[in-house]
Image 1: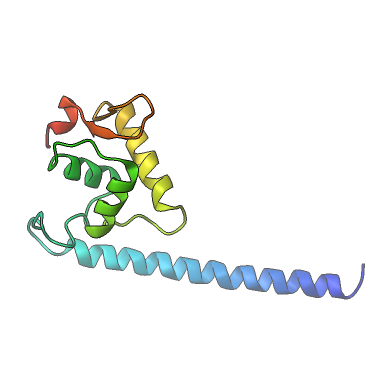
Image 2 (image 1 turned 90 degrees about the vertical axis):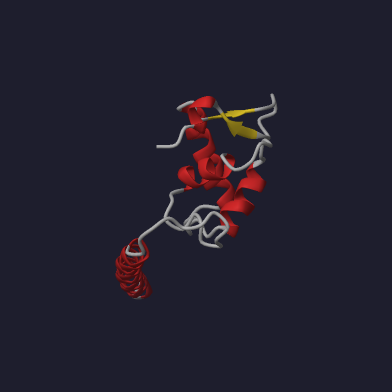
Length: 131
């Protein structure tokens, strides 16, 4: 073992420690921001640029689909969610996040693919009901 290897290992561990601490701080800050956002009472208007801010991705998809009669593509859903400030996360792509949410909504019967190639999605009767 050369002298460089232990130095590289120490540098790597130091860097990982720094990144872990930054990540923890960022997660704590995100929680504080979420609490601050949630402290605003009342319904956010449907035409607000922040209309999906308090919703998770699945809720935002259902909310949008309830306002339209046309089936939507994943890309159309992404554009709408982004225009309404829906938090899509930072690790995975918006396409991956929205596709995963749509597939989960299909499994529970709230939305359905409207074509065999699975490019357009629409609400089912179950999805039209609001809680």
